[in-house]
Image (tube, rainbow, N blue to C red; front, side, top):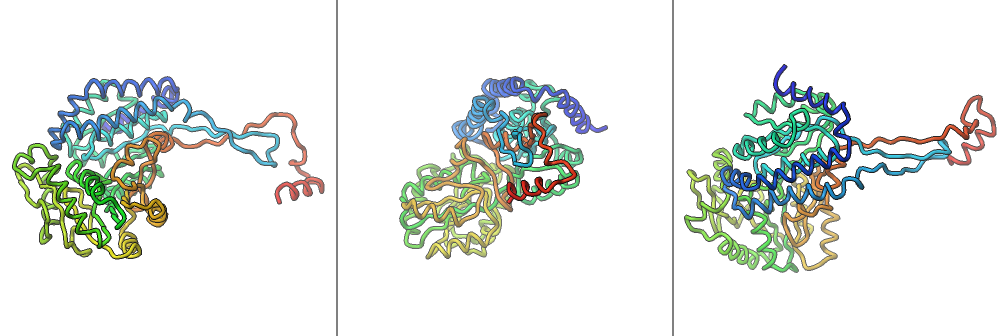
Length: 457
């Protein structure tokens, strides 16, 4: 028996003891995880700096800070979220009442990516623990320092039969996916998501897939262009654009394009002064393969600012592209890097047809001065979620579900939605022994037929 199979076997035995279903046990486990993140925060930040060159402020706000906020939110509300809910019954079952129970799946597999290696491993894990599961967490070797730090942190917090961290080369993923789990949570690319779902289908394992895609950012002629530029630049170049919900491209009403471009360039110059020292402060591209892919996407495009790069440092300047064609390579795949194409549209109908011609995005951002337009636009665009007059920040709203649709994924998490995702619903009918209505039993009388016609018409 392989190492992974042994872990899954031990976790299944531990889950069957029922300990993980106890609310106090779950809250205690969440508390240990919270304290461990606080105690190890400096080491975790150092690992992020080593793997991705993330500045400390960015790392705290998008990684460790979000993890601590999520765990605290779960601890505060878990008792209320997991209580059985009353449900209506029917005439046929009278007298009776219904209850809906939230039940953990059992042993779950969480497969985390490299771009936010702390947040995207520990926030799903917190949801799995809160729901009462055991968990195997596969950490990405794309961020090896973070993988090592998280594995050690989890090893100090939990026994392997409850929570186990697994590292290793891509071949380990194949070994992991050969095992039978009760639920599978994956964050990554649509292409990898299809492979994971295919593997899960063999054992009829339910999945939550958090994928990506080309998330559009639309700016209409009524928008506050200065604020829009600031928020677009921040959202796009966060983590060097290696964010699944980063604005992939900007679609601006043609009358506002010139001013928006001017303001975007001004913001890039202010936020990221283009000098050699920037490579020391700006997050770098994760590896040589992605670096080369991004350079290929830039070939032949017109950069209004940026465009420089350093292969040795895996650094690409924040780059804004103008005069981009819809047929350009940069518009054919998710960019996942610090390149921002800006395109124009004449009418909303034109913009909508362009957006709908692409797979449904994980996020959609709309900048406007009209609340009525925003309502209309979000009713017409199919997407996982998004913001009006901002980017990225819908991820931080603990009451909002986060997830994709179609090519950008399936399932939702964060807060209560994490507990819901890592649980299944068990419906139970409660019925007293007396009275026992004899109308339900054969032989069926005319009175019974009249009653059933009357109440079930």
